[in-house]
Image (cartoon, rainbow, N blue to C red; front, side, top):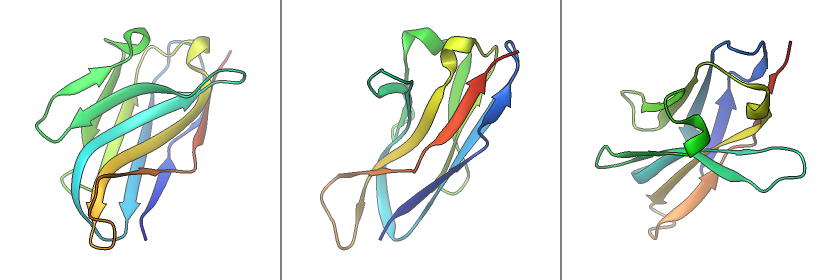
Length: 121
């Protein structure tokens, strides 16, 4: 069984930084994509950033130049560095991996439980 646990959310002032972490436990033997999504009240969940196994990245237009997705040395950990935060970045942030396990060899989405990020003065 795969579990993803986020940490690092909280309250931050506009313009400030915040770093989110995601640690995956369980027997994932292959990960194709590491990602971060967010969902603001009354809105659909949206992709914030994705890191592909080949090294390429993809970002939502609204966060380009401010957010950076990265991976730890262990493939089961990834991060989202958020700089110059804005009130409109307020949302619940979810980490995501797309990978394979021995019991589920086809590519499968795995999700964290979400962490609240609030940008306010």
